[in-house]
View 1: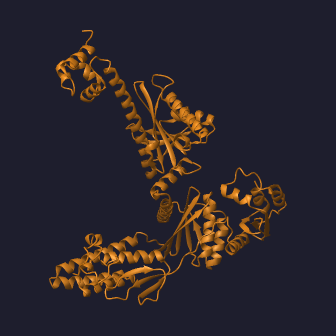
View 2: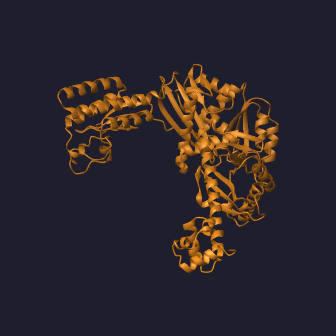
View 3: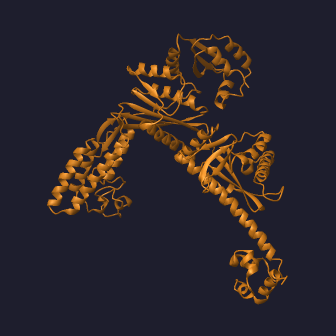
Length: 611
């Protein structure tokens, strides 16, 4: 704990209740954090009070504070401008900082007989032709990749004509994405025609490209060169498909930025889609460490991002709230010289774009942890739907299985990052009572599970039972949840518990808490995910119950003279049930693998002793 905490708090309590900017410094006099406040006294004193309610990043910052300064401003808007200016000037350690690696991109056309197309970030003095510059590396990269595919231009490292005939065509040739000049069968004239068509396509006039290709296709057909005509036909179809693909993101708003921010494991991911002339022209993603609060991350990201960007759009669509939205709009409008609007769309085209942007933000995070963006997205949807404090990365689910009150067992399945973690599955035999009591069974299982956690903790084990779930899902309704909650509360462990209920057709219908049902059908991804969990835990519990019954029935057959474990197993496999075995004749019993006449007689007599 910071030894100067009391001294700093006393200084903070003497601050005025006016808007201003505060500057935190360490013992070396270095600025480590800059913030703004509507009322300096209230905001700054919070840092030096109880540390229990602070996020980990804030606690670390407070531990390093040796002193602070402040600047009073006339308005909250002046606070915002001053904060942005000071952060840009000093780049404090504990503020969200973005690395601005944005540069210009070029289309590079090599200076050789068999020309190649590629995208580069810098021009070089190599004799090649450079087309550009372009602001968007995303646009250049995707356009060049599409042009090479459509017109069948090579992207490999083979050199022409030196490598003619030395290699077999690669996969791109077989999937019709390369004309394979490496075979030596492509004429240079035809190849250059492809390159010129690709350059026309990259110029942005796809209509002209289609018109030229149609003329060439007609001429080839009239010359009875049907193979060449078919190639032009395929290129026309590919260009049209690319044009239609671009229309998917068309909107009726000029100048729009769509921003989504997500958090997982204290890492933040922010993705920006930029639109101009009603068309997507750029995408950017930023990964930030030590992020605890999503609203704060989103608010700071917007300020830092537009501090680095000179192009300010007229409209900005966000995926959630930010602090001080009015002053942020004023600041952006002042930078742009025109009115800027920030909104959080709830429906329509912009909402769809925000959702797509969020998926890309999750995908960027997933690449760091080996999890797909779709998996992170469904966990975030589940978190928001259930009102959880954190992402449910580690989920345990329980189900009870018995047959008319006999062979009472339970199954526990685990999903980590939305995928089954089969190494963590566990089976339970109900020990505290006999007969059918699903509530009592669930209570016993959760009690034993939490006891195992305490035991693992005392032994320093943090895997298996030594790891607490972020969420518990029970295969059952309000009754099961109500039976388990006292066990969780008595343990003092903050584990959220919900039930999964089915409809009359045994299909997942909703998630239930102790206070009521939560509909999940409108949330398609969550509905599918929860259904998979419920089906998996039911399968696992039922499978264990069947194993138990077979084991018990098999062991009862072993009591018969002449019937050992192997014969008992073969009898069960052949007749399926004890009832079928008991009703079988001696001749039918002899048909089972491994059975002899004396063994069959022994089994028959065992079940017909009264006769």
